[in-house]
Length: 116
Image (tube, rainbow, N blue to C red; front, side, top):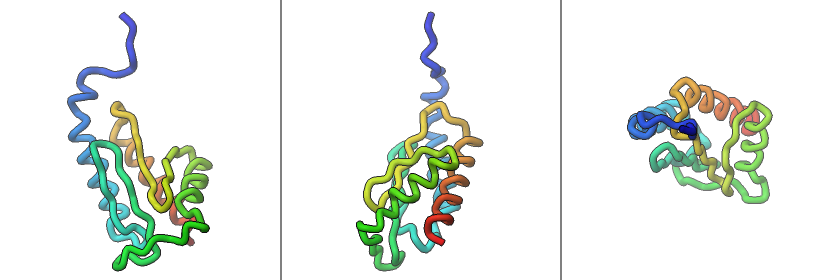
C-alpha cells in the first residue's frame, strides 16, 4: 500500500495543533504594535499588519509591507502567504509543534527586520 505521508492520528490531532499554534501566535504577536488582529480557521492563521494598533490603520498599500515580510521570511526558509496587509500561515496538518514554534520565531525575526 502506498503512503501519502499522513497518518490517521495526524487528522485527529489537528484541532489540538490548531489551538496550540494560534495560542503561540497570540503569545508572540498579540501585543505587537504592528499586529491589529490574529484570526484563524484550523491551522490557517492570518495576521493583520497595521501602523496603528488601536485604530487598526493598515500600512500604505504602496509600501507592500506584507510582501516585504514574505520575501524576508523566504530568506530564512519560511514560506508565508501575503495578501495586502495580511500575512497567512498555511502549515501542513502533519507539522510538529517544534516546527510551528520555529515558524513563529522566523516570522518574528522577519517582521523585526522589515519593520525596524
